[in-house]
Image 1 (cartoon, rainbow, N blue to C red):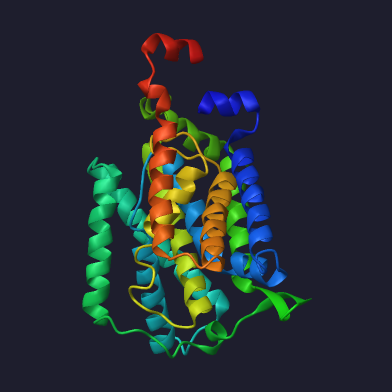
Image 2: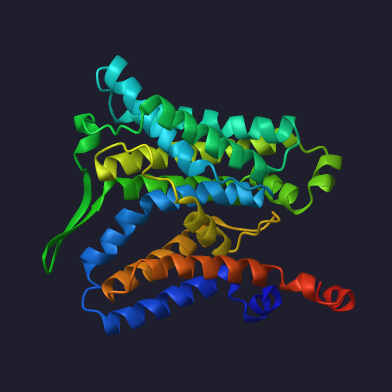
Length: 332
């Protein structure tokens, strides 16, 4: 599959973009509202949180790790930050809320990095443990009670772009701008800095990176810390969108996000992946889900499709390992 993509010179991102465009054309012909400005803006508004998660997760996958605790971490950040702001800071403000969410999310990510690096435990085992630890602590201390009385600055929507549409107006909201900033920052770090290239190198060959003097702790700390930071920001944006804080609202988001990032070209072995691929992976799943909703297909079909996408993406990324060694050597 990798060689096929190389020969066609499209790359994973080009193939994904082509699939999204083809699928959009089919949905435009079979539904009345898919290509409406309202629906497209709704897609971007609704996927802002998932894209922020995805660009954080792709950094961890490129570094050769995996994290399934980020959605629970976002829930913890939501609850802790809201409680702090309401009880001790008079409600706070947008700058204070974002700063606290980034700080709290980074600390949770660094906790994962510390366990993985210090005790040399496989990342998926650590994050399964912290997934249950974070969720158990959150439910224990909150009793599963939601926060409905959030501050005004978080409650009211902030329109960025409002255009006339067939049924009223189509509006792009503040989370889309935050998502854009996180995408650009992550892309800049990975594609335009030496440290970003070091992350790719470490993910491709950790032992070679160690021998060349790369600080493994810095790689782990940045990868999991950055995902934690993204999770904190995503958690705050999700609370802003739904106008409440529900302790278990984000549970279950891990697999679709992981599927989207793997679909976008990242591999579970590390060293491969891109921000653009992660964004396109999220958008492809969003278009599929949106199309199924517009066509009146049961939501369970989407779960089935996500499962199939995970299996297909992982299988195709490992097809090379099934070839005889001599054939693999020729293909290198």
